[in-house]
Length: 195
Image (cartoon, rainbow, N blue to C red; front, side, top):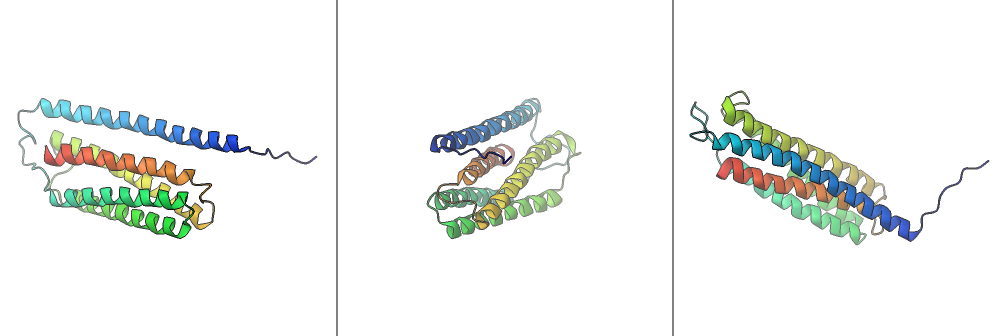
């Protein structure tokens, strides 16, 4: 007895695409709630402190490196979106180039963040400022690493010819996540470094 392989109708493919993108959006919504809770905790702690950062030898980090990181992530959002456009028009070579540039920008972001962590002059155990700073930026950094991993998976799929003008849902789904990570960084930069 031979196995039956179901034939997908065009309507099924459209529904599958819509469902996958909805699933990604709902996953991002849960991540928004996580970061919302972390930001709420930060503002409650900060609001209850007579000075911020609290006294004790901890100074707010300089703006140069996080400003550069902001520029890198905003730029990577643009390159990611150009990759989505390339995938939708079937330009695999351009897709691979844009995604490679997105990977480089995200990788440099992580490298700068690691350098900043090593040279800040305060650590996770240095009071409430250190713990909230590293919790927020650490969670964000972990999300950037997840995003980079997802982009590598999409690059591999594109390299193998599994992404094209008619099959680019994975690129779009990963772009949603990457844009989310970028927007979270804008809030983090504003909250931790500027305010």
